[in-house]
Structure formats: C-alpha cells, structure tokens
Image 1 (cartoon, one colour):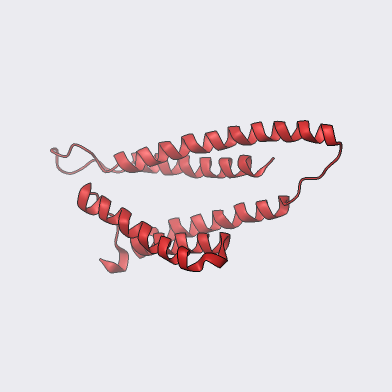
Image 2 (cartoon, rainbow, N blue to C red):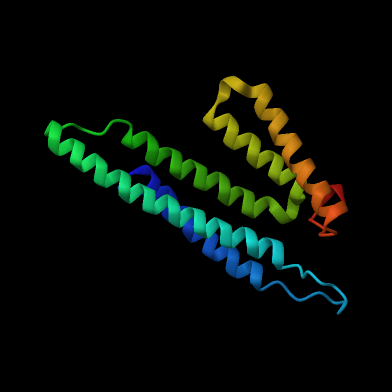
Length: 159
C-alpha cells in the first residue's frame, strides 16, 4: 500500500462517520428556515467522501505504475515508507484531538490550534506563514458562517 491509499482510507472512515453525524443533526426549530443545520456539514462530508475515494483510486493507479517501474528496474526499494506511515498516524492524532477539543474550546480556538499544529508539523521553517494561516482561516470561515449564512458555530470559552 502506498501513502495515498492509506490516507484515503483513513479520511474515508472519518468522512463517513462525520457525514452520518451531520445528517443526524436535529431539524431547525423554526419551520420558516429554508436551509437546515445539517446542509453544510452534510455537503462537506459528502465532498470529503468523494475526494477520499478519488485519493484511494489514484493510490491504486500509482501503485500499478510503481509495480510496472519496479518490474523494469527489478528489485528497487521504495524510500520514505516508514516516514509516510508516521505522518499519517500523527496527522490522524491531530485530527482526533481537533474533534475532541472542538466543543469545549469552540470553533475558533480548536481550528486555529489544529491548523497551527498540522502546518508546524509539516513545515516548521515557515512558522510566520503557519501562524497567519491558523488565525486567518478560522476567523474568515467563522464570519462567513455567522454573518452571511447565519450558521452559528460553537464559541467555547469565547462565547
């Protein structure tokens, strides 16, 4: 198995659970609401499922090409395999921590911590960019959901 297959399967498992939970959200209390609370999380979950399936398929295609190359070269070893498994495991732990901390810390804090931890793990040299991304992304998404879409995200201790 290559990194795309492993990553795709891990993300697919998360996406299925996430999507099921998204569609179990209770309907809005008001009957006049056109878009219910499960629409956006459900759409994100479905898109996540589709992209993870595409990732798995591309992994299988890449694996087939690698086997053809190995047959031509006869016996070359794939480099970086232990590091890729370690990355997938650690990124999965970051994602689990994000899910666990989402409600107690709220959207803004938990998302900023998640993005900062993942970007710092993947590229420590660009720490200024990582801090900017980890602050700009959740704030922008929060204001779009809060002000434009009227979908209220949990604020945790900031509320």
